[in-house]
Image (cartoon, rainbow, N blue to C red; front, side, top):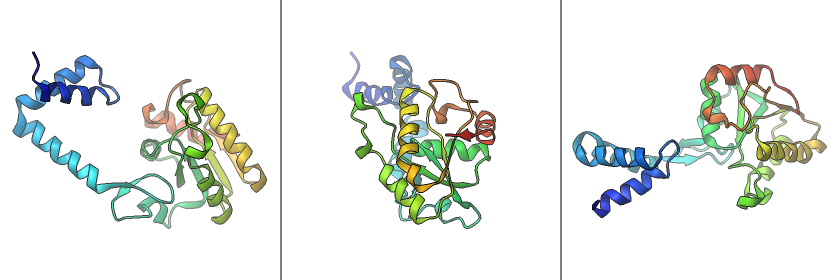
Length: 199
């Protein structure tokens, strides 16, 4: 019989990406076995992340609590005429690691998926449209997943922004089908960004 606190820890870990039931069980046991070296630092890091990480009100990316807008939005060296639209804040981190994009970002907070109740009103489409108009953006690079939901999201963005006359591009198909930005390596992302095409 597994003690309830360990079972609860396993259950929580199993919800994380990359963790199955067995890997969550092994991780939980390792954590409670070595509390001083593993569990205490993890508990501290989780508390810090909970209180110290926020989302930027402009781009939707991760920022330090109290630093809004984020450092990318405030960086005068970045190209303010180009915005890269991604699904999640974690996608911004992946694209930044590639070093290929020097503009600004806009995280939607997901992608269109009616079966999961992810409808346009639950995503940051209106904020994107407002930014294109107000910030004088000339190019919108749509960097969403290459699955059916990602394609539907890209089509929705293209239709939404058509009246603005902004140039719309998509990542070149260097990304594997049915894959997300966060799971791509920097070289693949760099090639996809450099080979982008009209949307």
